[in-house]
Length: 261
Image (cartoon, rainbow, N blue to C red; front, side, top):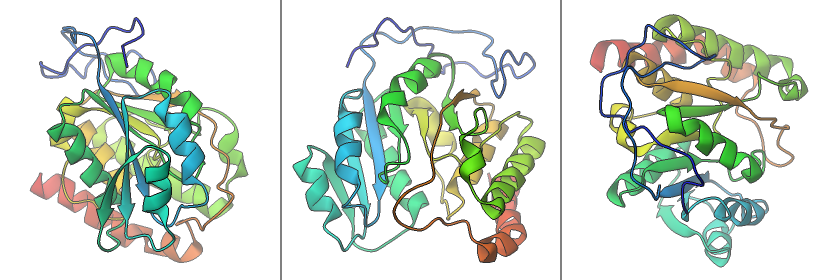
């Protein structure tokens, strides 16, 4: 896939965080250019998504050079469906959680010398047609987050889920010195040369941990408004029980980032 006329500024200099030019964005004091073509891989973490993953792969393949499905111990034939639709499949023997699955995908992108990695869910909640918009934003960012809170799609979510997202986002903004609206979004683009700063152990709150790591290491983070309807199959991780555990889990995430990184 070529760059489609987009110019790219590689992350070779430290970040000047004093000039914030856009909501959730950190500007770079000096920019150089990526030589074309830009190589892009999409990573789909998947666990028992055989019913939904096929169309996601097909739509994603239109915008990237390779689609990699990291199957996280599925028992419903997800790897076979992914292979049939043309994806490269990496299988985990047992379920490690989304954090472990995406970390496997990041390592694949690094080993295979990709420039950009698109992360998109396999359940159909994320529209692959929006990928070009995220890739375009990556021309001037190390991390691009598709935000539900820059449009009205977040209104479809339940009270507990919205409260949880707002809680996590507020903590990351306060500790990371950024202005992000949707820190838990799993629809993202990363510059591969910036992944080393966030390639650490991640638990079920991988998005919070990685975003906080990126912010504190001076990476440029920006958001793009993308509508995301609630998923039609499967269960959300946001329940009243998980909300009650938020303070404890958030303390664990924050301490790991602040004390050990």
